Length: 400
Image 1 (cartoon, helix red, strand yellow):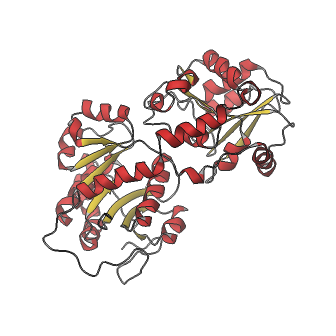
Image 2: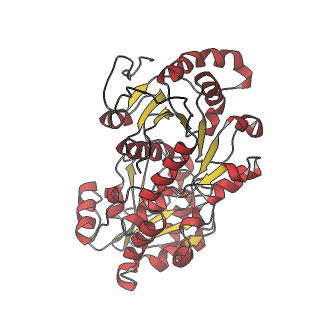
Image 3: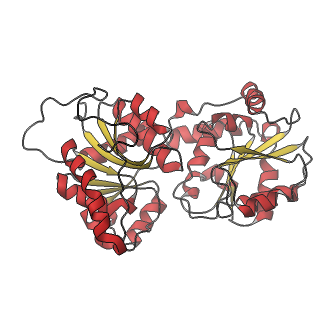
């Protein structure tokens, strides 16, 4: 039986790919819309994701503020009024909150508009009144067992949290063979020797993300450029510590690229992906992106990462901040194409079997449906997603 259509209200701090939250939210929104649900997005900062949301027929409303500080409580509450009014007019069935730090705004919207809140836990508790404010949430979705445990420790009842592991649309991260590898290296302008191995790390290039440790590990391997090249891709300017560490590498041993919206060419150009973070990562999306394209990955044993790198792949875990251990692990797997040519396909199959995207969306949809607003009578005349009307989304800079 087809699930009843929902109108889902959500918020976006930024309509651009700052981190994994923004991309997860966009991809999940796309899937919810494809299943017949309507998604309304209130946003704070505009950005490049606007076009993608609009292609889906998603109405965007903003800019609106969502942050709250007790030191400026009266001012912040006044700033919330336009978005609260908009929330009530949209008559949503459920508020899907992707940033717990916006919970004060969400509780006000819930009470004002009469809609339950489902809070998606993408990161650790970082709000000083977690126990108090979370009483107004109907249910929680955690991206890993690790994340669930943190929030239970913070005071949320375990039976109020459903674990829905992150996942990626498998067809958007295709496997890449020899032809794709050479094409990607050429298109990216890497200018490396034929047959050289590429170790890739992408995302925020900072010391706490383990990039300095990775550079130290790469330096200790002392591979000539014709044998191996380290590729780092991320927003510029990079962390000063990272820049200083890069300056110690031999000429030609690394490439520094800007961040890219489409990471598949980066992945196809690589032989090995490394996530050396020293932070307690909620899950490790980079890992399943890399494995989906049939690349082995090395990750640090932090946060939810061991939930991804388990079983056969647990050997690819290293301790955070240990450059020597990281270097040894990189060196042991760098030549997998000749030493263990089936490894890439096993990586891809592991993601497909353990983190299937359709099941991820099924689980998220089920939580939203289970905790939707109960109405005394059916709503008539629901507008299909994509049909514009007088109260639809506005252009950038025009609050709606």
